[in-house]
Length: 382
Image (cartoon, rainbow, N blue to C red; front, side):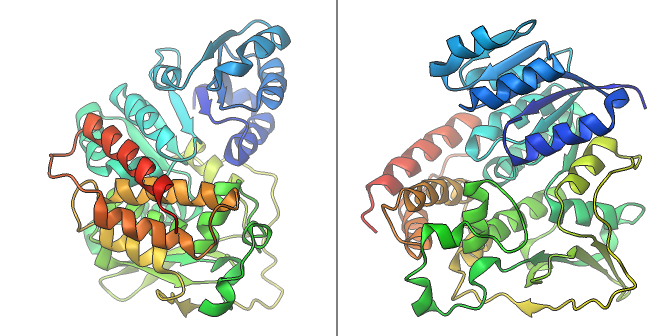
């Protein structure tokens, strides 16, 4: 495989920093063309000085001057609008989109329209605009490879298989830190408790989504678009050990699963190396030891966000975008201690009931719906 000319959008976050660890393990396989961050200019400066990209973007314009004074031999750009331009640069052939939230959608679409290989860690891209992205992929011939551990597992299980033979996708969830709490106990959940995930080390927004299990709802929408399956063929189950990352059941009754210790570097390197497999210095399962792998159904009353997400697929083309925007606002407000943990799904549900559009799906209306939903979700008292 020739050297990949890589742009990492969101290089200072959890996925971005782990991707750069992979680059360090395989320096002969990559040329870093661009690195971007929202506001963490100190870490971005360290990364730029180490990897010497041609371009760097800091979305928060307040930090442009200090970043420019700290780095050399790179073109410093600012503002969120630059991200989509970076994703479509002629010098780039692979884009790792590790941005969080709706902010990543336009960059994904831009990269696909430009025919890039896109390693997608921004699940919201498919959640808010899956139909637009699917159409763009068909038109451009770009390649979209999932970085979420669950969707990477599905993709790996389906390699060499005919997708028409899929009977069901089983998407696993750890259940987060509150799997064993009842509804009454959930009323007392603190921010610190919600941020203490038992298995994964992730950013704050994704960690809260895991606690509410909204992340699983978003991932079901993502799988719907990635594998062209109706939601009724995608079944979430609780698997507290996070060893089996997802399974496929086929029409003949057999199933395939992808297993491994919880480590996001595995799906990252698979997306970057596909169709090859590269070595990775990461812990292995010791199959000589006894394993206790358990499964249980999702309790939709305790975790209403999952059902809200699943139902949004059939509620109109903009409903998943409303769901996503309301959830982003609600999670941010919870982290700021403005609302309680159990108020997150309430805000999402109210937003879905009140924000609608009959327009055909397009980028501009999507932006308007996103903006309207955020304003509405901010205005809700609970």
